[in-house]
Amino acid sequence: MIDPSVTIWNPSNISPKASIGANVKIGAFTEIGPNVVIERDVTIGAMCFIPEGVTIRSGAWIGPGVFFTNDKFPPSPKENWAKTLVEEGARLGARVTVICGVTIGMNSLVGAGSVITKDIPAGWTYAGVPARPVKVSGMKEQEYTEEDKL
Image (cartoon, rainbow, N blue to C red; front, side, top):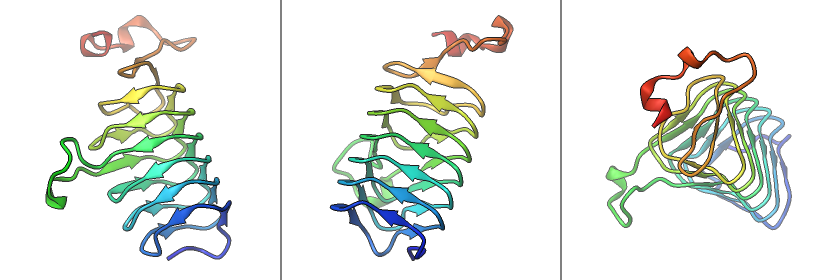
């Protein structure tokens, strides 16, 4: 179901089987597949691809040209596809690629052009290919784990 308050800039290809909440804005040339869940107050930039299996929670911001995947080893049967979750208030910069099966934490930030291959903790900033933690002003070195530094 698509809430009547949703703004869709055409041309876009939105599956009628997607669930899109109130006050969502979807940029032109965006494709949203069936069984995608987008909660309220989300902004999605132009030229994005959001396939089945993606859930985007309230208040998230998806920059232009962001691509999500749902199959790590295509083509594989649908039962092998992995789900992706973008939590509340997360922000993804332009041209980010999200490899399926990850969770992007609440209020996290992903730099433009990054490739997300693993979960991003809530409130963290990640950037790069593959995306890695970026030191934020006020963050202590001890807050990084050895795995994050790799």
